[in-house]
Length: 223
Image (cartoon, rainbow, N blue to C red; front, side, top):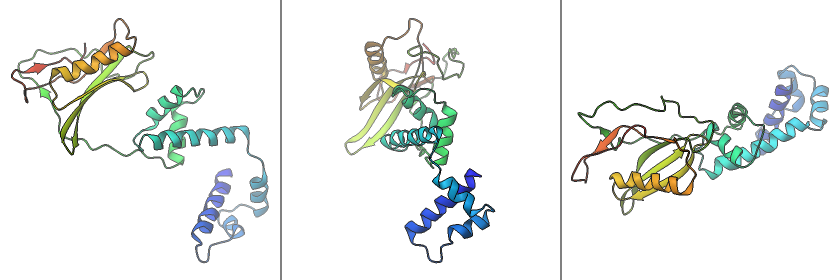
């Protein structure tokens, strides 16, 4: 029943904001959705519950995180940001529902060409994370990649190291090339600024490249 009442409120507010001609009255909308007008006004005048107030505040917090990150964060990354901000007792499923209800749909970053390809003749390298990119504690499982960014002055290459625990970028490096030192600089930043676990796994693709380098470089899937 509350969903029908909320629908009436939303429709009435939309019609009022747009000054729609021949907009239906609340009484007429109540008839359409088969609820009583008296029941609607009783519901509307009822003070919001503590749960509803908390959800409204949470929705505002989620909107701020979503907007601050240029509408690119999905519900899992938003959930991680909430945890980082000290918000407790909120599941990622609740965040997903609120984002859906608020119409917060993350934009999809267009994937370009791959910067690397698997080298020929390289022996099979084990995948130590087994395609599981989650972690129960921080600094135990990392993933890395390289992104090509087009700028007015030419191409820029960004190497990132991401903690699987909360998807935080804990290391990065930028250069006008994507030689091996670009990756090692990003990993060095992560290891210098954060207390990585003794048996921390750093995972990347099994790519290699010969572009702009005199010899072929290769880095493993997991180290």
